Image (cartoon, rainbow, N blue to C red; front, side, top):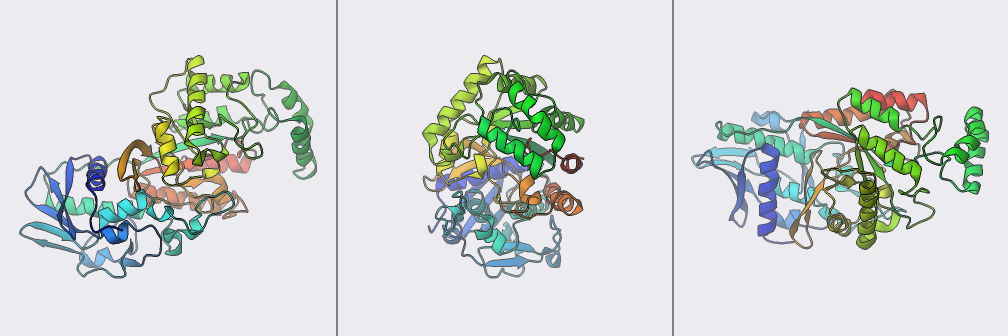
Length: 451
């Protein structure tokens, strides 16, 4: 914990606000307990209470107050009181005005710093069987705000304060968007399996899934995936996914595994396989995105992650595939702050979209806006962009997590999160695996979310 925010952190805050509001803003320290927010369009200043001792802490054992903005004449982005992590109570009124400008009695910028840099994950007290920091251990889950983008909600309030104080400033928040992506763990249900694995999968389809037609066609798919994926393969949903995205003017991103650091957890295919090359060419021809899905152990192994990124770029270059940015997501959502950040940075990737939870959907970083990564240990900003993951299909659908199935309860949960993103003009980032569309109910659910 520190008594003041570093110069690098303050510069990062300035960049965050300028990007968010489309207007050049500057943050500067006023004294030990306040930060000042400046606009070139006015001599009036916004003075924000600063609490670096709280918001540079490496644990989640913080109090959490609530603010009722409507009582003070402020419209909030989402209904109800607004959670305020880090404090046990808030001053009343929270926002005051004087001849110098406006004062906000809560450290909005510190909250953003603490949430976006994942300070509470620097020394996690709990991890799951994959070494992941679970949602159930987070401050957000324990205090009931995981499904709210609270950083965005507080910045929405800050934007409203700026408009009141600086009515002539060109403050332009971004528009709502959707970003859909697909981790390609299994491009084929049978095609890249060993004989033993193929037999086990086919037997399961026949005996447990009662899918006799699929079981009977399985040998043809397994033997026939030489140069292209076969029609009728239940995991070969790539054309359908691109069709749905294009109907809604969206671009799908497909993230490919390019290494094998754990034979039991990683994919059975290689990016050099003719069928995978053909698939990548087809994705590129249709104007969609190809990205990286680093193998199981790379979240703590930057050197191997770099090699896998180079392998993906090499295969794409050989196929004439050129992209202006390269991004992706860690396999199984494995992540270690800040080790994994630096792995992506060293690999010269444009963005990462891992930071959501496997066990609960919601706002792990408190935001649905893309932002610049910052390493709180080295106290430095990175060129890497973080694109938070809001929801993964199995988190909502699968029995091992929320277990809401594919009916109306699941649709309502996804839409609740999507509407929260809309309320703060963010981006609803949805992960749906290509291999998780084997039933008509799953396809209907997925398609409905893009409406």
